[in-house]
Image (cartoon, rainbow, N blue to C red; front, side, top):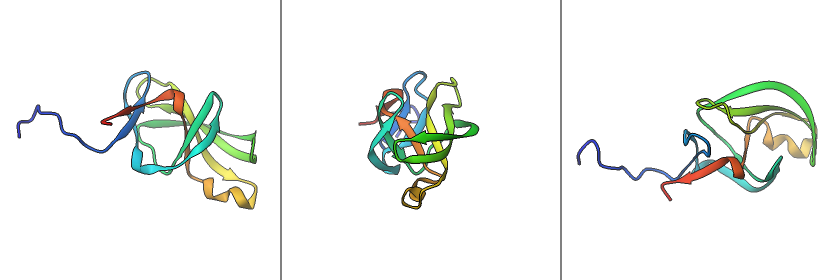
Length: 109
């Protein structure tokens, strides 16, 4: 296979603005989350993002410490990282990431 032939790799999500690779489909934990602008997905792992300052935010499921995450390449805010959950039932979100469906696009599907 030549170097310039397209390789069909894993299904990924990329930044809707600059198409920088952000996450793999296999890392989705849940699709039933609400973001700031509608539907959002919970991911266990994301790449090529910068994390903003931590802040306490009152979300639908209680108080959480979160940090906005932006595309490393174009700085578009894509969602947030859960740094800390104060309610025992929400602890599973700690260290995980929300990506807004409106801010990411599918590639290799």
